[in-house]
Image 1 (tube, helix red, strand yellow):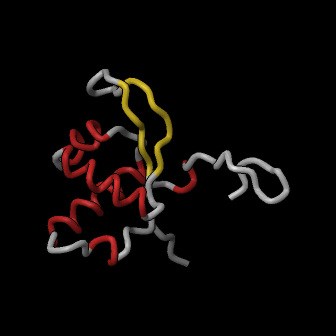
Image 2 (cartoon, rainbow, N blue to C red):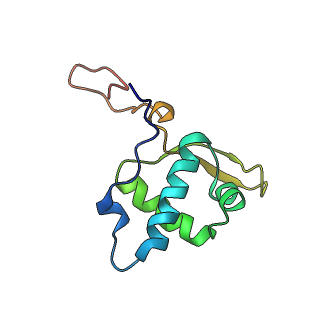
Length: 108
């Protein structure tokens, strides 16, 4: 059986109004990078060359699609400013603090 890599953003997410192939390539690059690394937007810009304004927009799109999570807010290794560390790896996603029907915390 062939090992599968990270699931990539769906075609629906990648075809947001007239963004063309640049949008699709950039969002897939960000998704793949954040699947393998936990990083801030500034760190992703540094690693991928994608402008931070674009990363911020794609971050919102991926969050709304349930494909990106904020892990913790601490000093960025690149800027030294407080920033959210991000991931698209579901195994690293923070557990929910919402109670389930039986009063258990963090059940997905």
